[in-house]
Length: 68
Image (cartoon, rainbow, N blue to C red; front, side, top):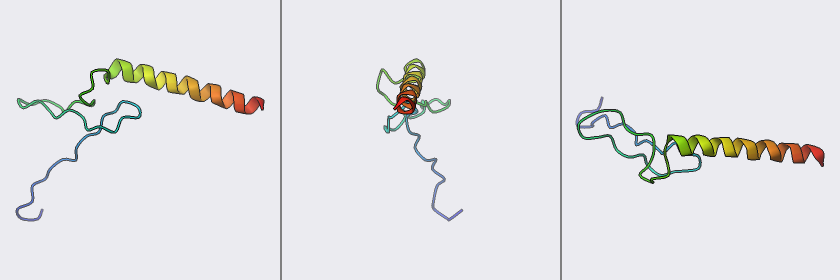
């Protein structure tokens, strides 16, 4: 390690599909850093539902392309 340079972890990006915002910082008293940004609707449930919606949309696009 270079003298005077601290090992700072890279900032985490929100894992909500299509979101590029930084994730909320870890709690000052400890614990893991959250995986989502500060937007209220970016949480585990809505991210799961959005991934399912995107998968259904992609599957329907593939079937319409095959039909043409």
